[in-house]
Length: 358
Ligand code: SAH
Image (cartoon, rainbow, N blue to C red; front, side, top):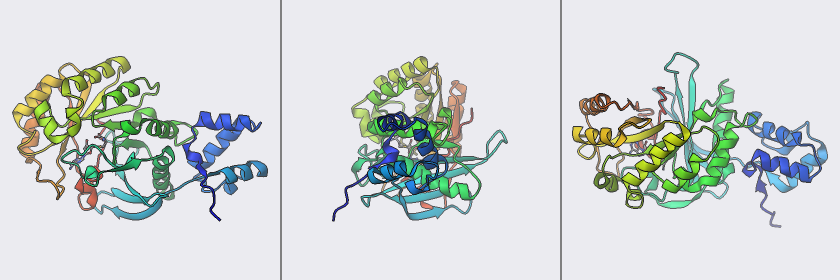
């Protein structure tokens, strides 16, 4: 007999769950109990939810499942503890996620940043990124995005730690899977969900303008990163096909609008590639592009990926680039490479330290 495919309860937001219990004539706090069981206590089945009446548990178990991901492989960096997970989804597709442990620069508690995928494969085909090499398969559901976080969280719990930061910088373009990503991010942010502060959750985009416009309307103060990688159209189009759809001046004007509207900073990601975008002239162009904008730049020396012919600039060139930015009044950090001894360095899952220097 073919079992009916059950709905993943993790696809329901808290308001949707409130509405569900209301329709069942159950008190609203049932939704909160279910949320806490799943996201706080890591319950894997409805039978675990011992403070729910048996009839509610049965109802939920008949209609829903708490869909998880299974671990297909894992690599841990010996030098810095960075962990790269390959998770298998219900349909056999796989996605990568990364855990990046770090000391707080201010000397506070340690940070546990997770980097999550938003899609299976990627349609954007940036010429430096391994994620798009195999093309695009499909969007992840909200429940699948959350399942990556829950799997890593249960690993961390065993060590007495918890997730402190989330970056949507794994495979895929988060803003082209907008609804699922935002719902997942809201659940991660919810005090009854993972309880991660909005300012510790970053969504990264290749420059999806309609998505940035929508994101601007979100009431929570989630962070925005924009993968810029070049300061002129010719170079940017050479690196990122999306630049042929959304030209740089359109992208920059929506970014300026974003910083004004939200009163929030944007982090621009800039991969430094030798002989492509890392000269002092490129740095000067970047200064002009970002003049008087509420932003900072995260410089990322290119991670060699065997399929691409690019290489990173020397340390000296990186420093010279950063000096031009500094003299031009543009704040920047250089992302330290993490997980150099594991595939995390290959750029397939770009390893981002999410250095929040401010
Ligand atoms: N589509 C979104 C989310 C993916 S994150 C976006 O473009 O922002 C993309 C990030 O991956 C880039 O900003 C960069 O930080 C990183 N990345 C991809 N390939 C890389 C490589 N070969 N070397 C270094 N960083 C890389």
